[in-house]
Image (tube, rainbow, N blue to C red):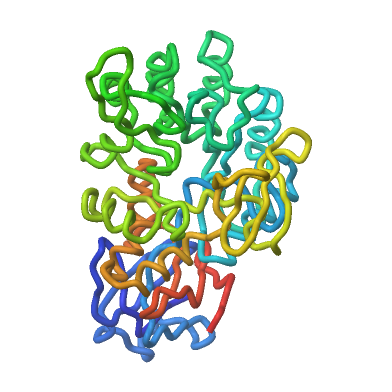
Length: 395
């Protein structure tokens, strides 16, 4: 198929009107509209041409931190769960996502990993598993169940190694004993390491970065701050180092709740759009009515309650994950002003792709997967194309 009369957002730049040719699910040609002619022998029939007049073509969105949606959670470990979660994402313009686990027993986590390994969802692309826990700090565990937190001993390190074909991202706390060996083993196997849910100080974080940690999990949401240990000396934490160190990408839940607007402005000013990955951290409650739900498995997860636009750990005033898809975060940032459309889009396309070291998607360029969103001036996703086929049309 061809997409005509569309301006392209890629590399945080907006092109003049162009046409995009898609061949066998791959972007095969991008040219100015001035060179497009319906009389050419290699132009497809009109039924295979999508007119994108007034819209912008960008890569399909990538969410690297999502637990669930439409009533299902990664920890359910079923084909139906993975299908429904991917359907939630595709309905919101997310064509690739990471199925994220919760701290639980290793047998429960294995069930979730095996499900991702064997089941090819009928909707968007599951990049792999984001293992959030169990190697996290007790002092800053957030909604992670304390009874299942672990330190990386020989058995648990082997657990990660044997599943490294599916685990593509892991969140760990730099202050957990023995974490540097685990980080190095992950890096050897191409697993991206992110710091989070930690109680670490700068020296521990520096060591983790030197061992290969490159990301910060949902910054300001259970990432360590300025603190003291056993002396009066103050240490900066993962939050500050995440903002200071240009080597690190930071996840941001830009729903206006987890990260209030002015705090986002601060992160954006410190970090810049190229190192911010907007993430949903979506729960099974995402896309569902208000009420009570479980984060993680329905058997041994954490009870949450949803009211208005936010999810709380039941009986507390603490946030759980969010119920806001990244597409709505893009809309929100554009509507507020201060973040240009092309930079907001970068944070859900090229930045997450770069953070994971993925080169086959994340931008509209020849040779890349034909996973494309058409968005309007307000950042609203109007058309979603997956593998070169229109799968959602909201015009």
